[in-house]
Amino acid sequence: QVQLVESGGGLVQPGGSLRLSCAASGSILSINVMGWYRQVPGNQRELVALITRGGSTTYADSVKGRFTISRDNAKNTVYLQMNSLKPEDTAVYYCYTRGYYTTGASFGSWGQGTQVTVSS
Image (cartoon, rainbow, N blue to C red; front, side, top):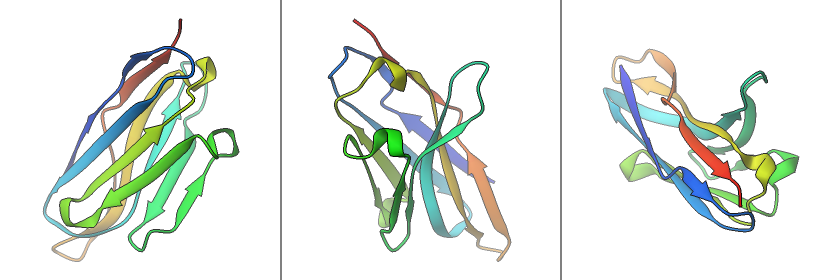
């Protein structure tokens, strides 16, 4: 089992910033991909940003230039720096990881979600 602990969500005014963190633990051999998705009630979960172990990144068009994803491979932790937040960024943000257990089996795991609310 892989455990993901998310932190950093909350309430922020439009134009403000938040930083999300997600730390993975368990019988992990390696994590290839870490990232963030978000979901608004009634909508499908959508990609926000992904980062590979080597540092390659992918962003949703809606967050390019405002959000930055990074990771600390030694700590199995991924971060999402969110700047210039807009009301439409309001959602539950979910951490996602994909990699291999020490047994060699692959895994894909989701965090419990953290609420981000952008409102004045």
